[in-house]
Image 1: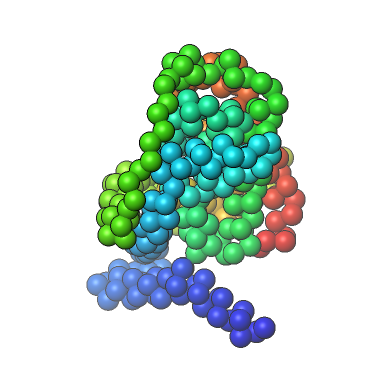
Image 2: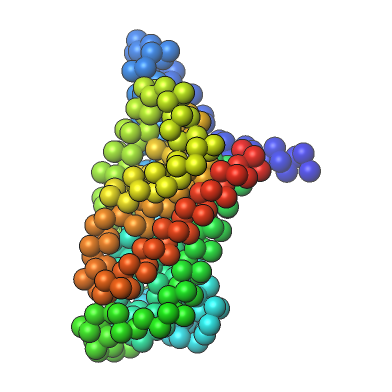
Length: 337
């Protein structure tokens, strides 16, 4: 058992976490005369290490996920989802969201396509919630920084919010709250041509390039903010505002996250620094979920597809779910850290 634990720790620290690269970067900066004990040295090491690590993991993960995704074109996904009913359909919709490496704004056109195809509204909303909040890439990236327990817990609670949220929206029978141009859109199912291995690999490469170009600015900004928090903001200040014992920290983190626009890859460096400075685990998870799922730009886009009543219901359900998750994880953080 100890051997397996050691193998897992090596995999988590040296393969996923790339701790060897952090040491290498520190030695390189020291070699060119930068004081690694200074704030500038610490910020440079954090920025270079986290940026390179995230881009390497992101590229590998997007390629693998896109290769898998090539087996499930929209037409096939619609047919698969159409075979299930009730909560099982919501679970499948949420799971489908985990293999779509998109930000919230990219998920909305797929949500609109699923809705116009006649899929149950609750199922499409389960997909819409889980797609930006949870994916296989986030699982691996979270694992590389926070460890397996927190990463798996984040994915599970994200899926729970997606399933519960979609189920509640289904129970409210709000189909008339979808804009007419979506409900009346014609839908033509056509089978995608069978792809060869080369086609799937090319698709994976194209997705890597496209996704990296799209998320690169957010990664740079996120890592920059993380580096500043890690090296400039006093730990006592973070604990006093965002500590797990503060009742207002979870709602505050959720509200602060909503106006921001980023994806899971841009928020992880910020979350890493906040956790290291003593912010509550649940507070951090609430912040990440709010940024990725309820960002202002994506809400503006969604507002074009649904009417205000459905929009308010969606935002309300997801917000309450995020806040509940935050309080629960702050209360039981000792199980994960």
